[in-house]
Image 1: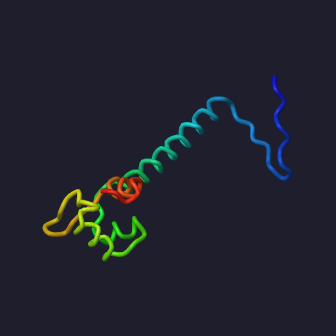
Image 2 (image 1 turned 180 degrees about the vertical axis):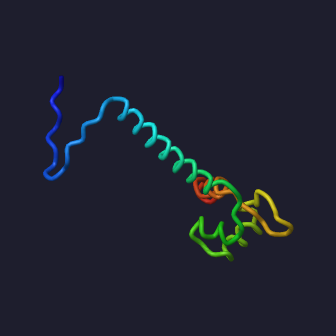
Image 3 (image 1 turned 30 degrees about the vertical axis):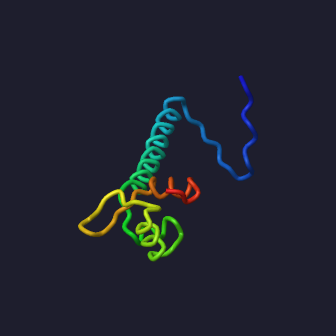
Length: 99
């Protein structure tokens, strides 16, 4: 049997059987998965011009310029309002600003 590593000073000893450790691991895994899923949901969906400007760290005016020159194209519209996906904006940046 492998010796346990030394405990930090002041750290209480915790004795737990394998069932407890497995149950705790399941709870922690579920929490982590929930947090990761929540983060993904925040990244999905459309951005309006203000959101696109924030995503690209630029101004609304620059987004209008890029849209009017065809450098970026809206992925959808809400009436007349252009909407963009983060992934499309990221592709624009990754291509070095080439449409």
